[in-house]
Structure formats: C-alpha cells, structure tokens
Length: 561
RNA sequence: UCUCGGGUCGUCCAAUGGCAGGACAGCGGCCUUUGGAGCCGUUAAUCGUGGUUCGAAUCCACGCCCGAGAGCCA
Image (cartoon, rainbow, N blue to C red; front, side, top):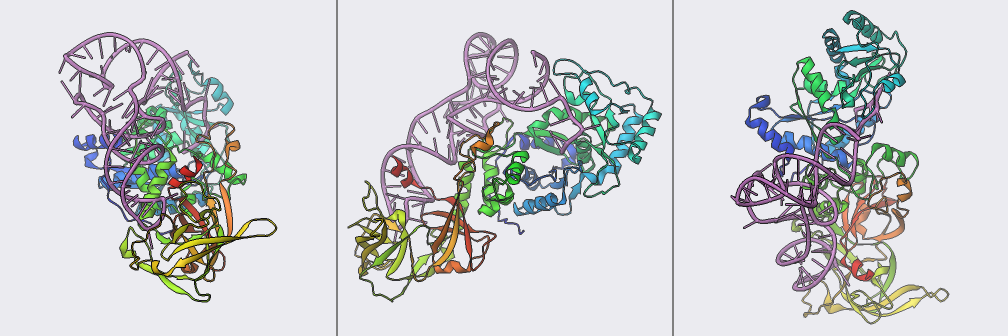
C-alpha cells in the first residue's frame, strides 16, 4: 500500500504532551533528544483510535526532529498473529508515516529481559512463586484490604535463580509457577502487589517459535523495551495511568534509562464502537463483511470506504489531545473528509435511482459533446466532454408530480437546468397503465440556453444532474450509513443497536461514460449526491462504487420540516 | 467502600492569576449552472459552596458527578 502523504501544513496545535516535551527540552533532559514509539499488540486490526495515537507519536517525532519507532508488543503468543503484523504495517504506512529501519518487536528483547529479571532476583526484588492463578487472586486482597504475602516470597536468591532457570528450560507445566516482583502487598495500587513478571506458557510464538516457554507480562516488557530503545516519552492511553508507578519502579530498580510515561485520553466516536473485542465480534458474527467493511472504524475499513489519509491526519490534529475522557462527534471526522475530498475529488455525474427523461424537441439519434468542469475548486484539473442526447436519465428525487413549496427541481410545467447542458421545461409524464407509477418524464429544451453560451440572462432556480441513456455505463452502488443507530452504542445491548439500514445496495445505476475506466480506489464526487470511491472488488465489467459520505444537504432539512 | 485520574458552549479543544476564544453541530443571511463549495452573522459554557487575591476557569478547602483499578491481557 502506497502512502498517501502530501502534508498540508496547517499550524501544529500544541497540547499538554508537547508542553511537557518543550519543558524537557528547555531543561536539557535526554540531551535534547525526542524519541517516541507506537507499540501495537498484533492481535487485531488498527482503528481510528490507533490513528490518533499514530499521528500523535509520529507527529511529535516529525515536529521535534526526533524519531518514532514501530514496536510490536508481542508478549502473548496465544493471541498474536503475523496477519495482524502485516496489516498494521500497511495501515501505518498508508497513514503517511515511516519508521525507516526502526521496526522492533518486544520479542527481540526476550533474552535481555531475562537477564534483567535475573538482576532483580539477585537484588532480592523478584521471586519465583508457586501459587496458582486462583491462589494469587485470593491473596491479592481487595480494593479496601491489603493482600497477603506469598508463602514463597522469602525464598533465597539461590533458590529463585535455580527455579527461574528451570522455568525457562521448560521443566514446569503452564501456570505452575510465576516470577513475581517483590514490592508491597499492601499497596493501594494493585499493580504494586507483587505483580507477575513471567508466566509459563508452552506456546509457539509467531517470531521466536518454541525458543521460549516463559513469556514476560506487559508491565515487565513494556517499560524495559522503551528503555532499551532509548525512548524519551512513552505515550499511552489513560488506562495505563495506574501502571505508571510500576513502570517507574522497574526502571529505577534496574537503574537503566528511564523514559517518561505520559497518558492521554483515547478516542471514542459517536455512532460506532472502538474496542477490539467488539470489532472482532462484529466480524466473526457476520454483522459486517470483514475487518475492512466500509462501515467499520478500522483504518482498512475507512480506506475501503474512500477516506483519505489526509482527512484522518487532519482529524487527529483537529480533535487535539487531552486527559479527560470524551466522545468525539463523528461529524467532525466527516467534515475533515469532505474538506479534503471537496478540494481534490473529480466531479462526475451519476444517476443512482434512474427516471427516464425524454427531450421531445431534441433530434433523435443526435449526440452532442458538452464541456464539464472536473473540479470547480481546482481549475488545474481541467474539463471533460460528456454526451447529451434526447433520452436521458435523471434522479427519481428530482421530479415531483406535486412539488412541495421551495422545490426547485422538475415538476409539470416547471423549468430546470440540466447541468452543463440546457434549460428544459417539463411537458408531462407517462405512467404505467396498471400501477400508475411514473415511468417517464417528458420535456422540451431551449436551444438558446446551452451551458456556457451567451444565454440572454435566463436563470432558473434549480440545476439537476443527468446521464445520457444511450451512453451510460452501469454500476452497483453501495450506500453506507452509520453502523449504529444511536450515538452511544456502549452497554450490554450494543448489538441490538446496530443500524439495520447501514447498507443499501443499488443495482444498475447510470454513470457518465468516462467512469468505465475507473480503477479500485479512485475517488469522485457524484454531483449533488456525495463522494464515492471504486471498491476494491470492482471490475471493469462489474463496476462497484462505495458511497464515502454524502454532500451536506440543506434541502434534506427543508424537506423534512 | 479504598486509591488514582478527570469535570469549560450540544460535542470536542484552548485560555497556564488579567476581556472565556476556536472547531464541529445548530440557527439566520449572502452568493451559486452542484439545495455542493465559499462568504457574513448569530445562539451557546467555567459542577457546587466557601476561601486566598485588586483580580480566580486557573490557587486552597470541603462537597458533588464521571472514569479507571482486585488478568499469569495489552
């Protein structure tokens, strides 16, 4: 996947993390270095929340002339897979960031971590514990009561060293023993109640294979990995705040480089869910077609939907970074999207729900090539020719037999401009004799009103889009709406809140002929309708478009009221 | 219940003891060969009570509300 870069240099907004860095720089901390990292666990696909973190970490490295590492936090072989590793790298690159040669894995440090653990054992700060998981839980205490010391807490250094080595050699079954830090079972912070550093897991790891049967826990691996890589600012989400004392404790006891952990509030968005667990459930239970379903908040889903990485980066800048938990209105994301697409997407005409329009006074068989602007926001994109003839398709919505007030489109006797073509006047309709359904609208055109010509000042209130019937190419168009029908789908009944109308498939839509050449990933504005992109599954003989987002539609509000 | 965080327009973000500002959403208008875009205007907030201060969103105290924490997950 190629990066969609093109940085638009809006002034970088500051935030409390950048202020901390500014302060550190002023004080000469870390010898003026700024080094961050993005540390995903390869157990799922990246989503828009990760994008916030990626933009934060890589963005800081870029702005402070520092570095940002990509590090896979792969300490749990039972959950992690290479499939996820690959997708994560693809997504980070697509977002426009590059880790150069700084691709790391926590598993790269397993040997070093083992040696660090030995050091702690020798210092009398870690011990091998024979308690089972259940027993550890029982002795951990509660929110209000301290825990109890493990009966194995006072083993000799020698015995701990021996046992720990034998754990590594595979002499014990899963769960039989752990290595625990010796801190304080009475601490009000559970993370300090002699936390587990290593567990026995006879499992194959996606990178180290069967070399190890003991694996470090997150707390033991993360800070030390940060330290090994020379990270200066270890930025993570709020739920790790309570882990910070432990993060600091390990580093202090080890007397190694001590990065600063800083926590910020993770992104929540209205009308969607963000937890990996729920996302996985949506995929596995078939509520969506896969991780890259265009309704998913995953990076690959947004990409398939037609989002640009520029829009996502701008979104990350716009929402800022703070410590209070929040839920961002999804309209802000959509606004960033429209903002980018408006500037760059080529305009084309497409009729999604066709209604035949016959121009009575236009010669049958005649075809004219009319000029159409590709993007009024960007003249450098030029113009194209589109064919006009006596039989056209217009949008069903653009004709009303009994128009409401302020309806500026076609209705019996009314005039409207056909975009880039002529002003036409509706002369009547043809109805299906049995159903009474309108199957054709008739009109006449005024040859003096050709688009671009000196039109003697004639103006009409409405302009509608159209496609010449004989020249149209056909496509399936997938209309997506929000995945959930309520703003806040958290809670146990979240699956009941899935929007049953989040996908509508339109067959046999009529597109202007140039679109026959479009390729997967191409983005367009279908005039007056919205932004659309060619789906990854689209074929020349079976075009498939996804609606990325609608245009802002002020008429929709008027019509409703 | 204990510990740690956090409370500013509807939603987010800012103001770092000195006129509470910006974005999105909303509302009104202008403009328009996209009811798009653009432009202009406008509504709207400091959790509460005390205190310190010439002056408090900001500092202090006491409340209140929200979130996180008892994985050998990250």
